[in-house]
Amino acid sequence: MILSPIAVTSMFMLISSTNLAEALYWIFWGGFSPTQIPEAMVRATPILITAFGLVPAYLARVWNIGSEGQILLGSIASAWIGLYLGGTGILGSLLSIAFGGFCGAIWALIPGLLRAFIGANEVFTTLMMNYLGSYLASYLLQGPLRNPSSLFPETATLSRDLWIEPLIPGTRVNTPMLLTAAIAGAASYILVVRSTIGVKLRIAGEGVEKAKYFGISAKKVIIATMAFSGFASGVAGSLEVLSIHHRALPSISQGYGYLAIPVAIISSYEPRLILPLSIYLGGVMNGVGILQMLFSIPSGISYAILGALLMACLPMVKRSGG
Amino acid sequence: MIMDQGFIASLISSTLIIATPILLVSSLELVSQRSGVINLGVEGVMLLGAFAAYIVTLQTSEPYLGLLAAVASGSILSFIFGILAIYMRFDQIVAGISISMFSLGLTSYLYRISVGYGPLQKIVSLERMEISIPEIPIISEILSQNFLTYIALLLPLVIKVILDRGSVGILIKASGEDPNRACRLGVDVSRLRISLLALEGIAAGASGALLSIGYYSSFLENMTAGRGYLAVALVILSGWSPIKLLLASIFFSLLEASQLRLQASGVIEIPYQFTLAIPYISTLAILAIYRKNIDSPRSLGSSERGC
Image (tube, rainbow over all chains, first blue to last red; front, side):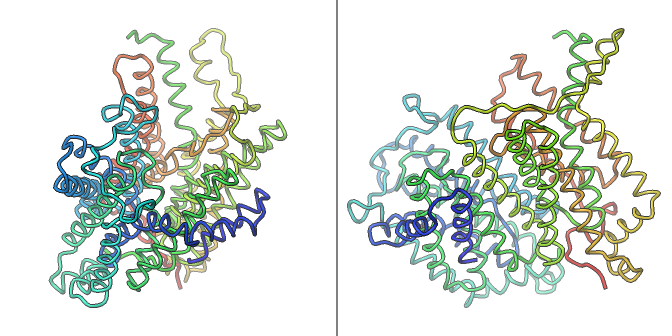
């Protein structure tokens, strides 16, 4: 799993007859050289937050793969209310984050309720919700929410009052980023290893019958974990808006929602890996991004990497019986 | 709006055009699901078929060679899915999605590498058959379709006969209902399932080829746009009955064709994103109304393979 992004990149470089050694050098330079570490962390943060939200769902074997759409709609919701609020300082920022999370949760609840009450396979439905989300976003950003004076489909820039300023000038590292890293790391460890909630979630994942035997409502678990993961994704989207882009745009989530899937799958077994894995994938994707610019590599490569990552996680995906 | 004969003829014609690729895939998906495998990789298989057909036709100017390439590459990718889902017993839904996603990346990457960012390069396309009945021009318009349309319309009927009457049909249904018993009766369930998947890959590859070298005469990134997923959902909607599948596919295609007409007529302003999202919305709607019932093959999606 760890090496699959690099394997795919190498394969694609060979197809396009780019110098492989040079390409790998740039990936590692882009991911892990001192000047690029802040950028790698910027990319790791949404992966980390989203993966953290997914861990309880994956413990209960509720396979939400719709984070990409939830991040996107969360970011748009957050920008929309941010523009509405104007300059209201820290309170406005918090409200904007909460609203982004709320809308992400709503978007995740649709497939969640379908799974709980109809039994619709949530992997399939969340994937469809991703596509719907991207079309809805494209409609909103080209239509009602578009900044008329911009050449691109994006909202107007938020009031500077709401921005989350970088902690170290010149980089894009900020306080919430470090804060979430600490919280998500510790909380996932407690959740998976040391809490009764973790145990209950695992039991719910064993199937409806077993859950009932232990007095756990599988339906409630499905709805709650879906809503929680959607909320986390929405928050990740909001933070991208407030701290990085200061507006909503269609490409705000650069596959973060998909990258979080392997991180969360592995973390639901070994929570201590959630931080290193997020940073690793953030770094590799930053490297791939640099590679794309340097060698004008087509962007299709990132989807192939996501597909290969998902494939590499297959041995760890077990569906619940019910 | 005047409902004259020309309008009806062109509506039927475009319904058939939309239905063909979906029917090609969904008929064979129905067989795979009857044998116990749900294949969401078809979306990616179609896309690979579309790309392979395009690139080979671009190089050779022989659309039939392109079709051959699509069929071959499609069946290989479907076979790879089969190895993941059947022999390695991974979750079928997630395995299928990972195949589709990989194929989405691979095809758009290879397309850019080979064609670059210049203007679209048009290619020689698969010709429609010219059927003309001079007395009734409407009928000629409806009947002049690609030969794959006729295959697609016949497929569900052929499959119904095979499933209901043929001895292979019994083996297929047995391995979907109870792989253990099928295996004890001497059926190699895994081999049967993977052969059906390879066959489905052929159909999905051809279906993708029809999109690229049949309809658009070019390739576009993610040009299948959810039609593979819709095909899977239609199989579920049909309750695994080939005849209902035929009707359901035609019904959905008619809806899409009328929607396109409505949009072109300018009577109602519909955002283009909505049009693009229709396959995904339909898929979601089908999944939302479907409940597991007696019709579904009992071991569908499970990794049991018998004995």
